[in-house]
Image (cartoon, rainbow, N blue to C red; front, top):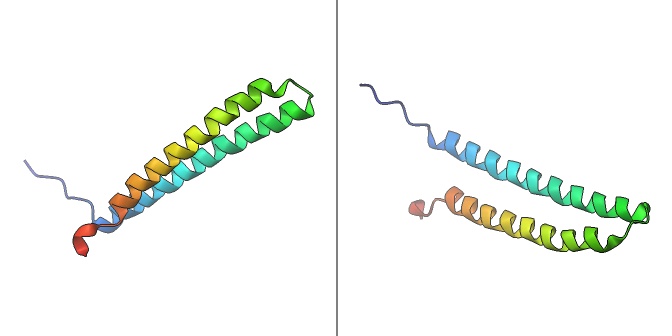
Length: 83
């Protein structure tokens, strides 16, 4: 049985950068959406306690998740065996 050809290192690095960039865009969109919800609630003169309470939890959670994912991708992208 023939073994499939492994992907070149350059292709793997491009895929890893694309995944990291996609995750940055994803978290940025979520944070932007939450901020938009807060501005809309303020514009409609809604009670801000729920929207501010949710955003105080959700935005830092997504930013920490972004930091962890980027830390992992940075470790994968900087190959330490070449040093």
